[in-house]
Image 1 (cartoon, rainbow, N blue to C red):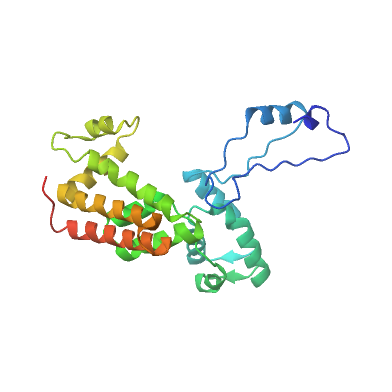
Image 2: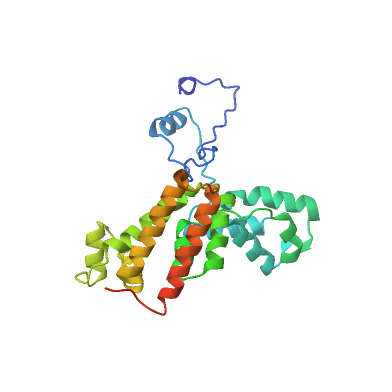
Length: 259
């Protein structure tokens, strides 16, 4: 900061602001401090945002970089590349550079061509896991879990926290007096869109009181096991929990617990 007050004219200084590289730290890049941004601007510096963004902006960022590659990826290869990256889209430039070095500029590439070079699948959003579990998809839930723990470097305790928060919302809405999305959002203290409250309310109604009690017991036992109650590796504890939760959701489609 002090250097930026009077930088040398012969110096080209590049500052890179990114997320904490240490495992299990913040998964998103924090905002640049206003004091730093102001100091850069005051000495004539330029801020270039290279982040991929979210939603449609992220889709455009991906398309632009894939199209700008010297490789000719067919539609299936493009889909395979995007699906593999998941939410870890920042890996795309390095991955494209590696594929270009393997196949050479101008080469037409298919999905089977690139699959051996993709490595570990990238991280995915937490709701991908809870959606798979809520859908009763045991195999799909475990696949998503692997992407989060291996590709995303998330600790099993982080996964447990996500699942506990997800089901706690349902438990709080397990009340016959709660009749609509707006009322559910008020109970959960949510502002703005009522969609998250609607999902939680639908889940509470689908599972019912008895099944939610089973889920709470599973979460509590997993918490104990992760803190040493059972001599299992943390990864195994969370895998078993996810499989059991997905199994409970699958069986709930055929029968509902007591309301």
